[in-house]
Length: 335
Image 1: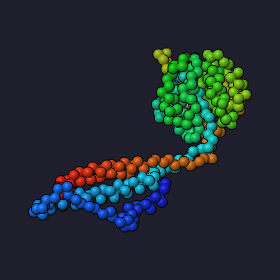
Image 2: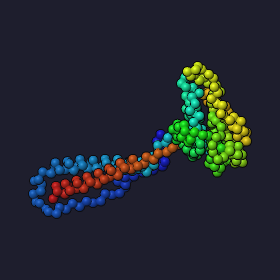
Image 3: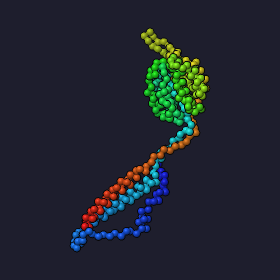
Image 4: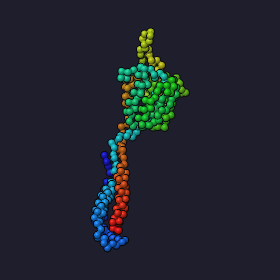
């Protein structure tokens, strides 16, 4: 909707009429530079009609310009829809494993078999969309840990960069301790009550310079809560030329360490064996770390005053040019 910041300025609209009726018009002295005794014999009707028509146009354009000028002075604004902004959100960091084992295709999405990273993107993307008001960050780790996205309210960017991640981008090994250490570094200066890390992996710590439990102790001292998610099916059928056999694709998953990391920091360890369980885990995380309900309402405003102001300036320029042109024509007619 359109709103006028200073609507009382509209009372100035009749000001030109008030001035016109209150002030006496100035006396106009027309003296020809050259007196012609037989001037009456010239036919001037066509020039007079043209001058009157031009004068009428000038008056109307001046009226429109004045109305536009007053409208601009009232500061018209376009008010958008109300947007709810939480006063205090959480600083939530996501750490996603990109090691080679995430390529294992033991998840199903819409009847299609997909690898673990694709399932993670599918579920975590929806989780990111729901975290309105939280500042989110993204850490990708493999052989090393990298900060892909610093803490930001821009959920679209975090989701996009997660979707663009690829297996092996950070190396084939798994540096869980380095990922936790990087999260501690990025969250250390934030509010102690809102530091949260969600770490998802399908293996054990096989690389990096920091041991996972040592990193967890550091996180606990910094009051950072860690939720760990172990991803991967417990059983899958592998077919070969020798027949079919059952294998455990998650044999390398170090659940003991992941559970210890969560316990040290006051978080929880979750096990996701399929897409449904993974979705349930992220839904549970929404309950464990609820979005702030104390919100402020913000209504975006877009200034519109420059449109009537621009129209007024253009019309005034046209009026000045036409007055000058008609004045020259009239002078030639009277000469």
